Image 1: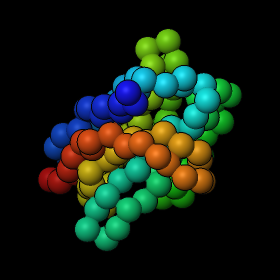
Image 2: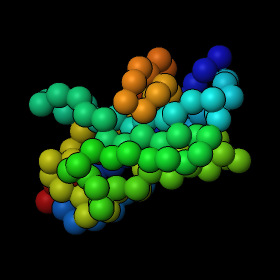
Image 3: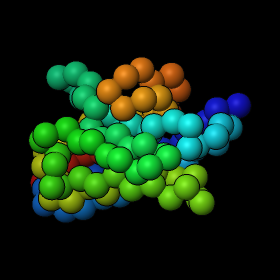
Image 4: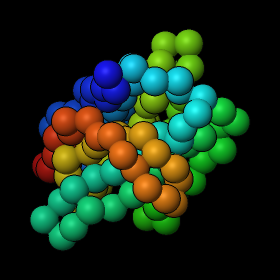
Length: 117
């Protein structure tokens, strides 16, 4: 059974950092890419994506230089390290398995990130 479980969300002030975790189980990790997405009132965005086989990454332009997606295949965990957070980063963040730039078939339950002073 495929499972993706996010954690690490919370309330932070602008400029602070937060690291989200996504623990994956039930499938061969290296056969897929893992993406981080966010859902806010304005819509859904693909924040970052990483190939679990070769580590190639891609990022949403507005988070480049602030967010880093990191894989730890041994722990079956994909992290989203978020620095210099802004109020506009406020959203529910999800991880999903699929293909970077393509289709994602399985999603986690999401974790809320709120950036506010």
